[in-house]
Length: 257
Image (tube, rainbow, N blue to C red; front, side, top):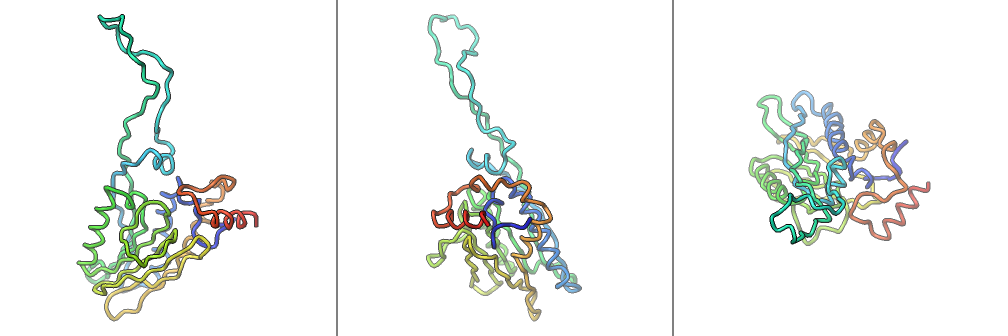
C-alpha cells in the first residue's frame, strides 16, 4: 500500500525514524551509484553519537526505554532511631536516563582514483537538531565546507532546530539544501506537507556534470519495501510537534481518500 501523502509522511517521524533513516540512505546510494560509475563510488559512513534526550523525545524515538515509574506510597527507609519522626514517602520514582547510542548513516561520494571525499549527503537526525549534538554537527558542516566538499542536507523532521538560520528561510516543515564547495551560497528547496520532495542535483568533481537524485522516488520505494503502512496507525495523530489547523484538515482529507 503506497503512502497516502504526496511528499514526506509525518507518521515516519516517530519511532520508525531510525529505520527510515537507514533505509533512505541505502536507497539514495542505490539510486546514485549507476550514474557515477566508474569515476566515483558511493559509500555509507556510519558515525555514533550519544543521545541524551528529553523524556518527551524518548517516548517518540525510543519507546522501549522506560521514562518514569509511579509507585505506591510506601516507606522503604530502614528503621531510624528517631522512629517517631515520619518521613514523607516519594510518590514518583524516576529512572536515571542513560545516554542512548544512535548510529547515523551518511552518504559519501568519493572519487575512485584517490578515494577523496567529493560530496556528502546528510539526512538530519533528531539528535543532530538539538544540543549538545547540534553544535557538533554545525562544526562538521564547517569542516566539510573548508575541505571543499559539496554538502546536501535532507531535513525531513519537523521538530528540533535547523543547523543554520537565515531571515529569508520560509516557515516550512521540511527543507532540502545544497551547499556547493567554494560557492558561498546555499540552494534551498522548501517543502510543505502538501509538496512532493524535489529532484535535486548532486555535484561531483570539477568538470563533471551533476548527478540527479529523485528524493520522492527514493522515499516511495522504501515505504513500499519496508511495509511501513503495516506499522502505522493512521487513526492516531503523527509524532509531535502538532500540525497547524490547515495541515490537519488537509491531512484528514488525504487519509479519507
